Structure formats: structure tokens, C-alpha cells
Amino acid sequence: MNNQPITCSTSRIAGCTFAIYPMTDQFVDVITASLKEVDTSKVWMKTTDVETCVRGRISHVFDVTKALFLHAANTGHHVVFSSTYSIGCPGDSDGDVYLSEDDERLNTKLLKRMSQEVAGKFSLYPLGGGNYMNMIYNQIEEMKLHGIDVSSIHYATRLDGDGEKVFDGLERVFTNMENLKSSHTVMTTTISANSPSKKEKINE
Amino acid sequence: MNNQPITCSTSRIAGCTFAIYPMTDQFVDVITASLKEVDTSKVWMKTTDVETCVRGRISHVFDVTKALFLHAANTGHHVVFSSTYSIGCPGDSDGDVYLSEDDERLNTKLLKRMSQEVAGKFSLYPLGGGNYMNMIYNQIEEMKLHGIDVSSIHYATRLDGDGEKVFDGLERVFTNMENLKSSHTVMTTTISANSPSKKEKINE
Image (cartoon, chains in turn blue, orange):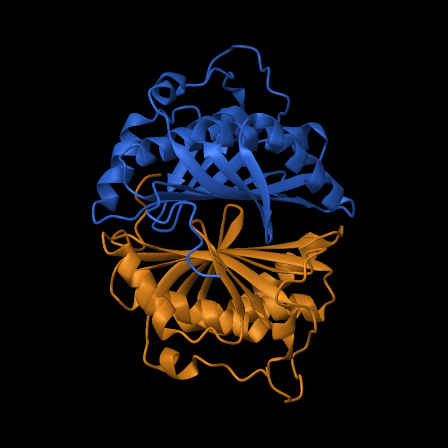
């Protein structure tokens, strides 16, 4: 916490529940190393046997999740990040105090050391309104502006390219929804790195 | 395909995009063995480097995803299933021909040989309407009728218990939404088996 002015576009708390799956016998070490290297001090955080939840300002929620995944992927193992980002879910307040953090990101230096191609997908769920499909289509167009490959798949939109750019696109879409005053936005993502079956369709 | 009467409550095609993450160096073998043992002939199916998509009648979509995950978990490795079930998504039709299958499940015998405790979560997203939170709360109550532990967590509902019962509860909730005429329903799940950090809160 500090006394710097709040510059974020929203005063609502964002959150992400996620898990990182390293497909290796050393999966515990990969996750533990990520948690040690990444600075999570500007988010509320809780880990259980099923998932980790981080909550705070949009900027820090994305900074932390991006850094944790890309650090794990940097080990070279096949690693998958599966997440649900959410804002505006009625009735919860744990971690609201983290909204008074400033927007200076804590893991920029760590991320600069990494370069990682990823393949993934995202789905956007604007809840509570009837015009949701147009909101989704508009944000798929937004995603195409971030220097990554964007294509249609069942129930989601596929994303291929540089890991940082993929996360930056996801953050932009999520922030756009907040600026558009979507009352409750959920965005799910799956992002894979170092897959041995990269770009191949195994079974059609 | 066959000529038996259609008894399913819906003529709309359901689908599930999912992945199974075995946290072991033998992850390819675990997945390949599951795909070999489970009968997927009543669903449309496509696997890429990021995920597998199955589409068909609700009964078979759940039969196949349940059997694939529980077979993988039966290896004893720490295995996680991450999925998005969907029905009513505007504008897609691949695999519609599979709706003419009957409701006889193909993996009942295989599932009878397995007993697996799991820990997981689900979130329900009824899209397009303003009354969605009540629909969600009602289906969380439904889940409590299936002999598993149901508890609140951020952005989701936690489920602990027998793997088959967890999947049966998920199928019931998803089918209920269809019977309630929800125009577009999405349900996400994460289900974990054999976690070394079972039931422990690693970091608060």
C-alpha cells in the first residue's frame, strides 16, 4: 500500500483464478520456482490444492499471472496456464484493500528476460445483458491489433504468437470491457507453451 | 447413427472443449491410453495441440469426458481436467449429425471399474439474460443433492468427492439449464485427482 494517486480506469477489484500445469515429474519445483521469482506483493493471493486466486487492480492481476506462467514456461517444459479472469462478480470483497496500490508493475524486468512462443485460446463472457455477442465480436477484433495470430475455434478464439503479446491483448480486452461498463465480465484462457504436438492436429 | 427414438431433452448440440494435464514426464502415454480405452464413437471429436473438442448429445459429451479423465486419473498420476461445456452458442453446426445417436452410454462398464476421489470446481455462465445470478444459485443448490461436498470459493463453487458423482452433478446442472430454456449456457470446470497437496492450503 502507498499514497500514490490511483490512475487505473476502475475502482472495482479484478481477480483471476488460475493454475499452471507443468507436464513433468518436476511439476512442484517448476511452480515453486515461479512463485519465488515473481513479485506478488501488489495482489491478494491464495493458493489451494486446486488453484491459485489473485485479486487486485487489473494491471497487477495481469502482471502477476503473465509473469508466473512465462517463468514456468521458460524452464522449457511443456507447461499450460488455465485461468478465469473476473470482475464485477456480485457480493465479494476480499482483498479490496489492494485497490489502493499504484499501477507500477513489479515484474517488468523479469519479463524482459523471457521470450516464449505460445498457443492458446480465450473466451469472453459478458454477463447480465442481451447484447453480449456483439461485445464479444468487437473484442475479438481488438485482439487482432496485438501482433498475434487470431483465429476461430469452437466456443473460443485461438491465439498464437509471442507470450507477452498474447497476455497484453488479453489485458486490453478485459480493460476494454470495464471501460464499456460491462457489469460483470468473465474471461477464460488456456495458454500452452512447449507442446510436443505444437501446431499439429493430432486427431480430426 | 441408428434409428432408435431420440429421448434426450434437447435437440440442440452440446459441446465440450477440454484438456487433460498429467503432471508427469509420461504425459503423452497417459493421454494416449485414455483415448484408446474410451469409446468416443457417439461424439464428433477433434484434437489440436491446445485442446480436444467433443460435440453431440449432452449424455455422450459427459460420458466421454468423464471416462477420459477418470481413466487418466486411474494411472495414479496427478492429473487435472480443465473444460468448458457449452450449448446454444450462436452460429455453429459441426457435428450436428451426432444428435441422432441414441442415449445409451458407451463407457458405463469402463467407469464401473474405477473409483477416484477428486477435488474441483465449477462455474456456470447463463448468457444473454439479466436473471443469471438466481439461475446460478439454484444450480449450486442442485449440486448439493449429489452426495459430494459443495462449498463457496472465489468466482466458482468447489466440489469434493467421488469423481463419478461430481461429473453426474455437473451433467445434471447442465441438463437443468437446458430444460429451463437458457438460450446459451457455458459451464467451466477444473477437476484434480491425486494432487500431492491434497486438501492443503499451500499459501494464504
